[in-house]
Length: 356
Ligand SMILES: NC(=O)c1ccc[n+]([C@@H]2O[C@H](COP(=O)([O-])OP(=O)(O)OC[C@H]3O[C@@H](n4cnc5c(N)ncnc54)[C@H](O)[C@@H]3O)[C@@H](O)[C@H]2O)c1
Image (cartoon, helix red, strand yellow):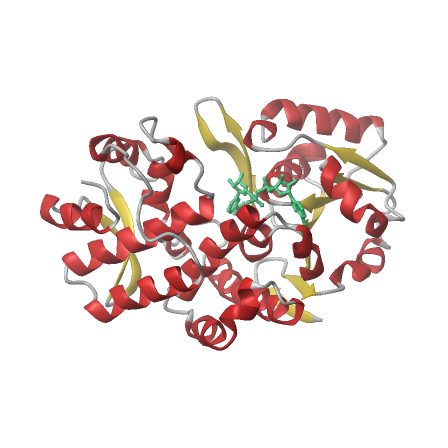
């Protein structure tokens, strides 16, 4: 079993391995009452590992379930089930469950403990670590939320065996992002040695993969727990373009079918080309990004037509952009924010991912 400490205040451990769920009963032993929040399919798959939990609440699937009405239903169920200030919530599932149950725990009784048990690759390498919780509004994603660090994270890599391929690829997009961050050298080495086993979801390699990604995320979170120091922004590498691709209304079916991680992968290509056009990185960096993204079987260009002007308009509406265009780009000082790059550089970046 591997353990990675997330050094925030108070610190907590992420336990990673093929039988990490076995540690759940001991971890929860100190609580009087514990509710697990999950989804029906996940309960079907891993319900036996939840023996001993006081009771289980299920929620819906997909972004539409990440809503204030789910928060109300969960909090009312917590109250009916007698959950008090010193009790705990266990979020068992992907990022949708983790973000929603985490936010419910952050507001119920003004904040009770939450244990994150991520069961998707994306949640294990990213969303379950770092305390960002949120639900969506019709006006936008993740608009209502809170920072609420978990008391522990249990990443059981055996749970990833049942993940649909598209969901696995989704997580690989974030893996590519970490590999291409300045802290990603150990991950690049792991991918160089064991790429086939990563793609086959070999249990031993998965534990290493999740542990290395967790170390990178934990270090970034510890340096900037509340996203105020400008360090955590590095995690948005590839994401400005990815979000635009995911929300542009002119996108074709091919683009709509992209998993979030695939959109991130294309965003990484866009960003490194933009950085190269701005003379922030050499062509070796462009080659490295292409190598990692293509090696993981992720797309390097937008499949089908999507309007460039609309992508630009969506990027300007990005909640982090405050009206201009904001990217997180590699450069001599690592990943830093670049505002309003010139048109000629944007032309090159759009062209590199097949958007003209
Ligand atoms: N809080 C953060 O820092 C952060 C970071 C990144 C993403 N997110 C959020 O994460 C969400 C996406 O999370 P996701 O990609 O995990 O998607 P998800 O939670 O929707 O899970 C994907 C699907 O896989 C199913 N599933 C989960 N585990 C399974 C398993 N082991 N076997 C079979 N099926 C399984 C789920 O029921 C669901 O249908 C988004 O809402 C995003 O905003 C949050």
